[in-house]
Length: 143
Image (cartoon, rainbow, N blue to C red; front, side, top):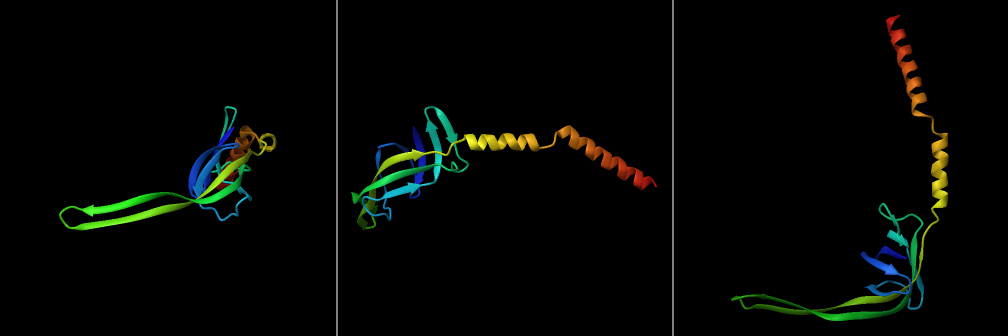
């Protein structure tokens, strides 16, 4: 089972017991966090795609540690102008471990849809009622 979830503005494909690095989260080390913006769920080949997110689904993770990423050198130069700028950057990251992927049971949703279908009037009944109203209006106009 895997899920595609949005964490801190980025989308990740996650599975249970997987460790990933995400942008710095405001949670303390060792605490559990929950992410509700699950975009896709795959449960043994049964795919559930959200619009935009799957309702009731969530991913829980444990914050392992906060750290800094590798240094990235940003070097800018314009030839024949004497312009050179060297700058460095280290991104603040959080290492998290996925504890569980939770999905809402679909049985309640399917049962609710079946009830709606049973209570809705049939199209032929609605068409006959509209036809009677239009005939009545035409008769009133003739008088």
